[in-house]
Length: 96
Image (tube, rainbow, N blue to C red):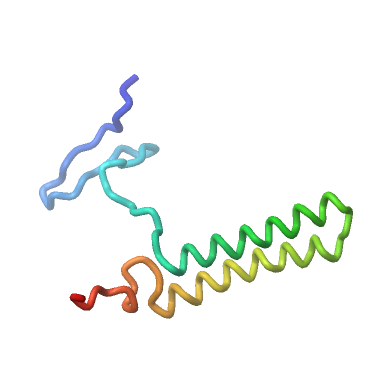
């Protein structure tokens, strides 16, 4: 079995990949943006809070940690819409 997905190039120049296979030739990026980093850091803090609450058996603190994780998702979405996501309008290089 081959490790590469069977693909062909159409007349328009786009790659056509067989169903069920992933085209690994396209660069997807790694999400390096202020919105992504903020989302991940806030969610990690929420996971830490929830983990500590789980160990000490505190349901209210556990729920608060889960709430912080949801807040991280919302904050990342808002920042992306505000232009701080990958290729966002606030991240354009001004030439300096």
